[in-house]
Length: 100
Length: 354
Image (cartoon, rainbow over all chains, first blue to last red; front, side, top):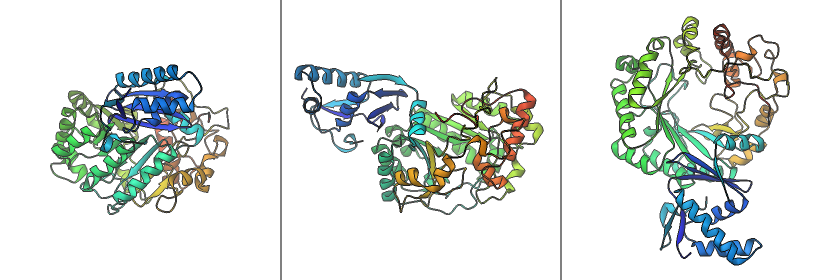
């Protein structure tokens, strides 16, 4: 939960009407995220930890704090398995930082 | 939270529904180191916007919802700062495809492109015969340089496609081009129409396929996408004749915004207005969006309707009226009718808006 998370360099993405589309340039796989997934995706900028993103989600969405934290962690790990985000114990720098 | 694996067409469909410029072609310059006999550009002098201006444009594209950009020229690598433009686009998480002749690419540039995760690079090859290709480009040694670049990019793991507009002096070598592309492991995209220059002059038409040559290749699925049944929507006069200006457009080196690089109707300029505002509010673009099948002067009653891939840009450029019959599309449709083939859903010109 204390790891920093950044969108991977191989990713192209755009959020349109609250829906994030994430395209892996390596695998040519295009993912579509739902409303909550898109919200989390938009928080991933290389300077926030998973814990911090979980905190933002707890403030934004109603529900049990533990359940939200677990769901965020599971989701971000899933994105990592799909090679569209990277983890680091330090904040990311340079092009890994992205608000897009 | 993850709605898995979808097709890119979902983004273009969303763009069409919500009037979002999902895909934009950007001519970063008109300068070119080749002098191709069939080129649609009348002059090769426009240098393009500055790097800083492209950075601002890419920010506007993010706001407007653009997902995918094609960077082209002229020859984009004639710009010393072209890799910086690509980097600026990738920093905004735009998916980037590049159209190039490949002749100016260096090993270090190819390595940089690899690290930028470019979606695809399309390289123009006009013949499997080096002499013929070089005569078309007007640059001796260009075939060797272009094909070497293709091999180097493939070696670096970059997805490459060959673009091959067919001309009357190259069409006899279609099989050789296919074989050449196959030997490299790349796809080749043929086109069967050489267009007029963008100033309307038609000197390039002398390189077009003769009708008999067109007939010879129009049934080849590697040359022209083949549909087997008629699928254009003639009975619905509310159909739109072209998707462009709904979800995709083009920007020239001066910053002028067009519905398509083939359709020379300016909606505005990105140096004076944000792209999103031009896209949604341009009277020209909104007029184009309101064109329906019933507005076209000749199409509704034309016997070739189901065989036609009419382009409004070519109708305007070559026949003087965006609502008129495109004479070159008609010729292609005649060849299709004779061959008994139809365009695919991606190429028909009349489809429901939704």
